[in-house]
Length: 247
Image (cartoon, rainbow, N blue to C red; front, side, top):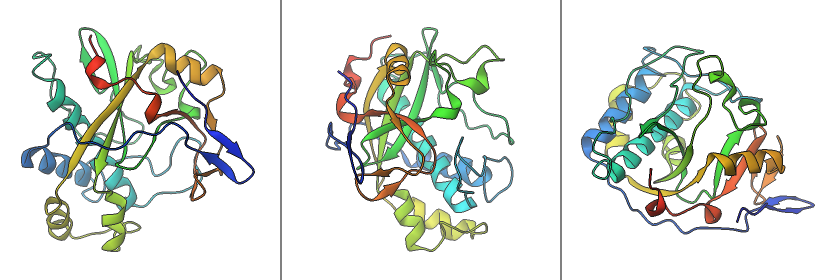
């Protein structure tokens, strides 16, 4: 059952939580590959990510984009490592870099089913989808012309430690230039843990879109986080256990 957040005068509050418990491993090679990918897409200027979220107001600096890209790629490796023995034909995460207005058609395909991987911090409790990116049928609007707009499953992965905290500690989060060696030493010096938290299918994404599971732009989440962009949401405690994913 999918539950809406509690709505109070001062904001929106989680009511279906799930405790973090690592269930997937990362090798040093996975972490280094994720680092190189994220660095090239930001500070290294080999590729590029958008400086803003769909419908968002905040223009993000390279430090913010880097840690999002790094954790996103870690999440893909976490999912891959968890399912690769069960599905031996699945491809490893894509590490190719792309420019602005270019993006992957999907993260994984297993038995012709397209899978989207979403990541958040280890204490995060929401799978978030920016409302500007999705139509009423649950299709990803930027991919409509390519024919790859429909994902069959959405998987949430949580990551520990919190990358934003690391970047803030070194005063890199709002920087556009950072020493690669210093950044790599800091990132590779952490003990990264991942949890493939759960999944929902396409029909459930249609449900949250059409039933108004929306966190408005500017809304306060749990009394402390202001939403930069409007998002659809699924709470972690409402997701199916990843052990039940059979494709």
